Image (tube, rainbow, N blue to C red):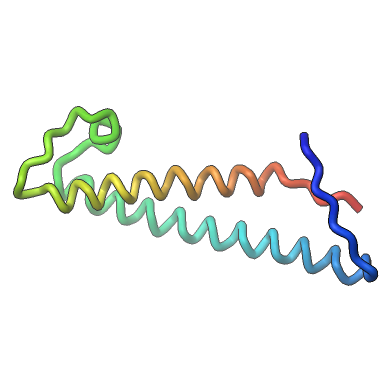
Length: 96
């Protein structure tokens, strides 16, 4: 595990601020993940598409659905990115 060092003249003030910032970011990521999942759950059935098959390139992009399929692909990519960010924060440890 790698370390990041922060220098501050007021350790007692900085630690709570860091904890709060990390927890706030986690909450924002949870909210964003929830909204993105809701969007995927709305788009996939309306397009009659399995998201896993779409990501695997098994779903043809018909002209009539091309933009919606691209939107769903974007939401799936966003969900993956948000989960990776949250995972990084979950493994973050602030040492006293």
